[in-house]
Length: 160
Image (cartoon, rainbow, N blue to C red; front, top):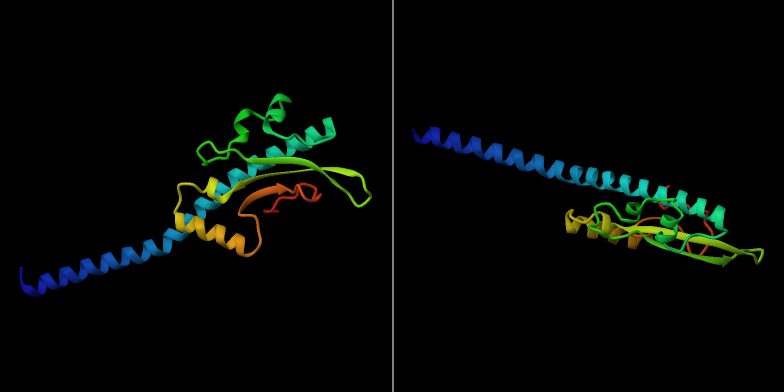
């Protein structure tokens, strides 16, 4: 092979490598965002199931369930619903209490949540850290949740 042909071959290989690198740098964030959105959708579905079960429990008992055991015993959810998808066995955080309303009446409130660090586990650590940091900067919950144990928000979710 002549020197000129070798140079052309090396140049061609370099162009292909650079093109592949450019494409990967473009598509990697898109793939990460798609994976995050997919996981969030699944976690939101679970949270909606838990919210419906809690509302049914409140209609029946006058207060929200303190833990998943009460919802499972009441046959409102399956045992598997308490586990955060993709979180290697971590459970949703749930709390219930009563707060004093404007009229002085005690109002049952509850919240249920999953942290980004739990359900994004296994993804790029820097990506997860940046999502959590952004949530903290804007004073938002670093994950998905509905309800609030400090005030009555009618079990509104932070993604709605």
